[in-house]
Length: 149
Ligand code: CA
Image 1 (cartoon, rainbow, N blue to C red):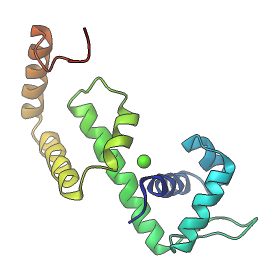
Image 2 (cartoon, rainbow, N blue to C red; image 1 turned 30 degrees about the horizontal axis):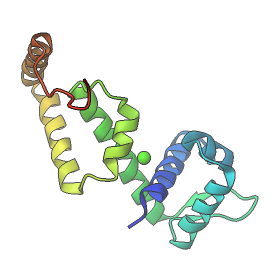
Image 3 (cartoon, rainbow, N blue to C red; image 1 turned 45 degrees about the horizontal axis):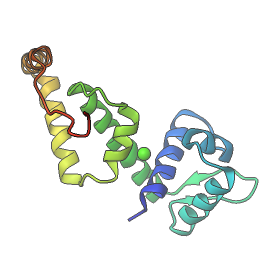
Image 4 (tube, protein in one colour; image 1 turned 60 degrees about the horizontal axis):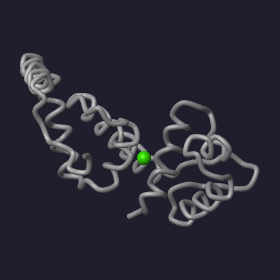
């Protein structure tokens, strides 16, 4: 298992390689808002664990193992973002998905994926759910923030 931080690096490298010819250290640093030494450190660790191959001044290449896990990490993030959109959470969807992805277990994420698939294939259910959400919102129903005065 990789640490949440290394998962994020691998996820971002996979994403960059999907959309570009190469994943540069500076691009990774910009995407994750971290320093260049942090990226180099992470790349070194990922390379030690056989997720990627990196030689100085050469392009960074994912191994099969790295590609497989990278694909999973990108999909997991995308499922959670879609979930937050479908339930119409008023949160920062990016940040929330980032937080959730490292703490939810695979069975839970698969169940969420199943729910999304169901709602996408049963539009009438999704519409009913959206109507229900609007009703509750208009009535001011829902959990009250106990931290607020
Ligand atoms: Ca992530």
